[in-house]
Length: 276
Image (spheres, one colour):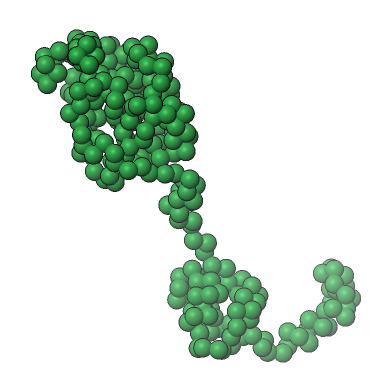
């Protein structure tokens, strides 16, 4: 077939075709280097980039520009390593802060509205998961705020503190003398939570990392709660929420406790306030 027809079909010029023909007949000057790079590339299961390849080449044999050019020329594309999710989280949460353990396990308090403890627990029900956030006054043992949610997001803890503010049982105009103690969880080190506590003039305290005993009043409450409440048999979120609401009422007003002088938390709170 005539070369002109072939060039026309291939949409190339005759001069371009002859230039390619001459060039293709010459040995590739990069071929030997390509074989060396490809051997290292394949030994690394196609995960090596130019830096890893250069470190494995004889010292000074090729600079990074040549390696990158040859890899591009022969389509030696390395697999992209997934970003480390923990580094991403650390970067996103670099504004998070922790606080000293000012409570220091001083759980035997005789003054209500002095120290609050808070935490979150998981409540599986009907093949779903709910999350319960609670704030407890460790002076009286009273649950002063709680919130249930299907999402373990910031709104869960922020909403719990908001309910604390709206608790009419608290005879307080200011929270200035109250310490609020938690673990070092993501929610409690979050700038939003820190700012909300700061606006209430409360003092933040945190357990030592990985030490649940530092927040044992909450561990104890959640243990009793899960023994007393048949939450796993709830069919809907609304049913679970009502069950918890009734239990909190029972716990604060009807559940007598030996270490509260055989009183309920509310009775003990009122008793302590009269003594003060």
